[in-house]
Image (tube, rainbow, N blue to C red; front, side, top):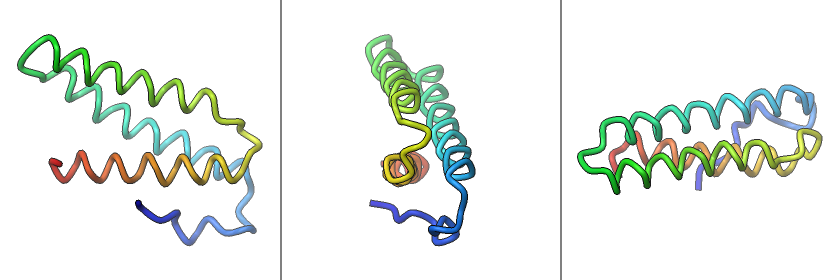
Length: 88
């Protein structure tokens, strides 16, 4: 699992952590949407699209004031983004 950036310490305002979570999820949704758009078959296209929707829903479900939940999601989304970019 990817580590949370060190720059996000206890002195970083939660508002900034939330913004980073949103940007991290947007990057992942973009990658997933691209995979969906370029999939060779309808089943694969739908699978990628459903994953993009799941990330979107997870972003919406995270309490914007729950700092630890935001940090946890940033870590999960960064790991998945790195995996997709590496072609795994």
